[in-house]
Amino acid sequence: MAARRKDYPTADELRIWREFIETTEALRSELSSRLQRESALSSGDYAVLLALREAEGRRLRSSELAVQVGWERSRLSHQIGRMERRGLLRREECVTDSRGAEVVLTPEGAEAFRNASLPHLRAVRELFVSALTPDQLAAAEQIATALRSRLKAPRDS
Image (cartoon, rainbow, N blue to C red; front, side, top):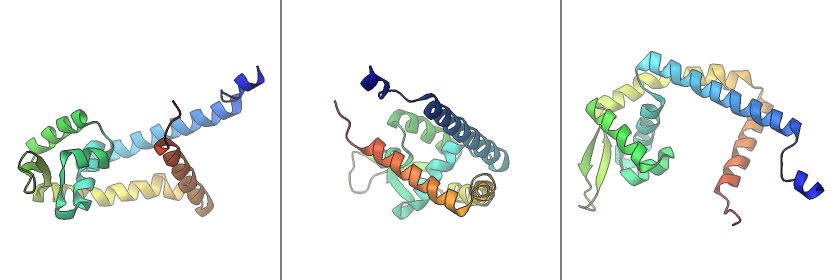
């Protein structure tokens, strides 16, 4: 029976988990709301524009873009279609592989990203960075790194 209890979180661990999840969701929701209100970009738009902005030549294959933003390809395909209709990006034939296409940041998309970035970064500072001490910020980085490492680790079958 004791070994079985170790398989499950304690009441305190569950309380901490819930606080972490609820706070993360509230933070994400507030940042998304502000981004939409101040720039008319969704958080999905911003994630895609950021990945393209940072990519060499401001272009990526769809599969690479999906990895960059951490989405399934079907979700990304719908997002790309919406953004393409708004002129934020376009699809072009891949110059190195005629079977594939690349997603390319347009000048309008680059401008929309620039216009959204300063208000978004101010909100990140206000809601996240300024709420924490330097030690807490360092601890948040350590926690995020540990969680990301665990998620990337091979799972026992």
